[in-house]
Amino acid sequence: MSKLYLVPAKTDMERMCRLADEYDCAFEYNDFYLAKVLDDPESQEEIIKFYNNYRKSFIKDTMHGAFLDVTIHSSDPLIQEASMLRLNQSMEIAERMELRGVVFHTGRLAGFREPVYLANWEKINVEFFTRLADKYPKQQIYMENMFDEAPDILAKLAEQMRDVENFGICLDYAHAIISGSSGKEWIAALAPYIKHMHINDNDLKNDLHRPVGSGSIDWEEFDSLVRKYGIDAPVLVEVNGYEAQKKSLEYMKQYGIYPMDKKEI
Image (cartoon, rainbow, N blue to C red; front, side, top):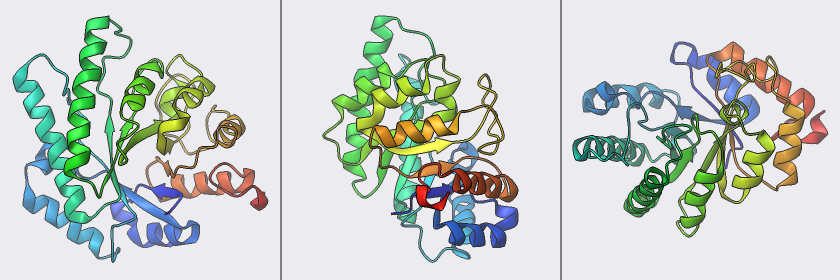
């Protein structure tokens, strides 16, 4: 299993592939979450065919599933039906490509902690993602914290689904840092359930997707926490373009930031 992932830049694939080979990276595709693609099988095939020119197999790779306007816990049955359709469409693409996994978002209203709302969110998500995981047993399903204000709600969901082998948490550390709760709180609460991670840098206030090491996030603290809590999960360097990804990987290697080997410092 690759421990590092990159978002492939379609306009720079030759260099992207060389960079991926140099650091033993897999790819996480961001081409399939928009409705216009999900509803267009021909467009999907064109995208898959394009990447197939550079990848003999997608089995190590992952993708970002539908997330815009997706609310499977909606009290409106039409919105709920449409949201569930989008997630199923995402999984169908992943199955067709034989991808390793798919990342989805919590879809919660950040900061809204009304008990009935949270209970419904939890109930619907447990039921739906348990069915989805059973329907697609060869793909991992990762739920990512978006602008959730604290880790407790996601941790409670993950604990209820701990016996679903192909379900886990994708910790987006940059999102965690701007949430109002500390990175330590997020990692301590979610450590037993983390199967995938996203990292990029920011100013501690906004979701900027800067290269790792170019913002204000304390990456030595991130590294220390991940190793302290024994997290053994792959990491997507979620920045755009070859130059930003190369800069991130070089920084991580220089300072031995997880999952880079400390011996490489």
